[in-house]
Image 1 (cartoon, rainbow, N blue to C red):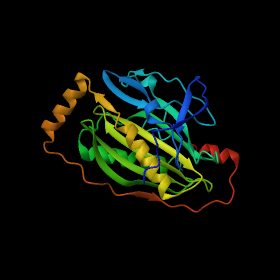
Image 2: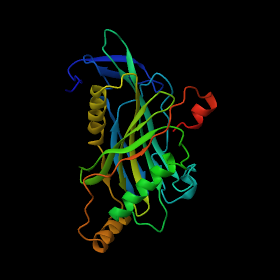
Image 3: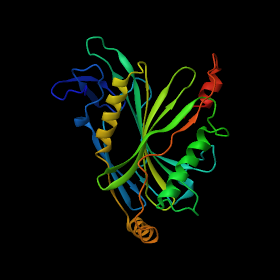
Image 4: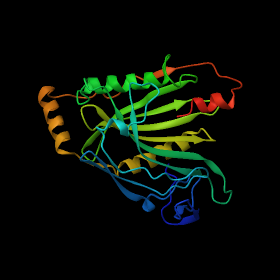
Length: 281
C-alpha cells in the first residue's frame, strides 16, 4: 500500500542551502515530495546522465557541492578504494529524513542517495554480460568478504537482484542488508556500465528505527520513482564500444537474477568508537 500523498504538504525548516523542503501532509511513512525534485545533469567524459533529486533534508550533515562535470578517464579524479582494486569517483551525495505521522512528529530514520563511478581493470570489458557480473561479485567480495576491507559485520547482498530497463538503459538492481553493532542498514543499488571499464552506480542507503515490510516497500517505491527520472545520453565513444560488444558477443542476455552473497558473522556486544567508524561506508 502506498503511503505518499501529493494533495497536501507540510513545509519543514530550510536546509543548509536555504531551501524549504516539503513532505506529504498525510501518511505513516513520509519522504520529501518528488514534485520538488531538482533536475541535475552529470557530464562524464561526453556521456550525460540526467536525474532528479529532492533538496537535502536530513537532521544531520549538509548538502555537498560535488562537481557535475568529470573526466572518468583521469586517474587523479578517483578516490583510493581501500580494496585497491576498484577506485571510484563520488559524483553526487544527499540525504533525507524519513518522517512518521505528522501529529506525532516522529522520525523513522534517514535515507542517503549517492551516485558514483567505479573503475574496473582495463583488460576486462564490462559490456560482456558475464564479465560485468563477475566484476560486480568481485567488487562486493573485496568490500565485505573474508578478506574484505569492511568485513567485521554480517553482510547479505545481491538480494532480490533483477534486470531493469529504465529509459532504454539496462540496469542490474539489488538489495543489501548489513548488521553493524545492532544497527542494521539497508541499500538499494542500480548499476550499469558506461564504458568498457567504468560502472555507474546509483545507491539509496537507509537506516530505519522500525524494520518493517511497509517501510522497505515504501522506500523501494520511492527509490524507483526517482530512478525513473534517470536518462543517459551516451557519448560517441560509448556508442562505439557498445556496438563493438554487440558484434563480438551477439544475443547476450543477463540471467533473471544473481545468486545472493552472504557473509554471516557473530554479533558483538560492544565495540569502540574507533572500530565503529573504521567500518563506516
